[in-house]
Image (cartoon, rainbow, N blue to C red; front, side, top):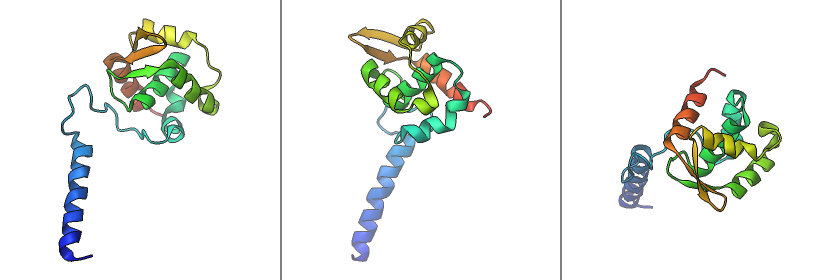
Length: 134
């Protein structure tokens, strides 16, 4: 690889990194509200599961993971339950009432057909949970 190719490759990598770090081109609603790891749900839950005291907080955490930490994204309840069941070590037994309670708190808005919209209040609450002392 020539010096010119190395430099071009480096410039491309720096540009991608800047876009990821500074979230260029994304509105405030689309930017992740948290710096959590959204690539591995077990690593994600391992950092916060001790702070999750209720079922609705746990379902919120799974939804935040699934949405990549962005509010106004929709999440499918079937996919959330599937993720939940794969991670029972952290989340315990699932109860459908967790969705109802999360909607009552304003963290989700039901869109019909098992689809929920993750609201900014839910993301903000999750960020507060994340900040709590472990």
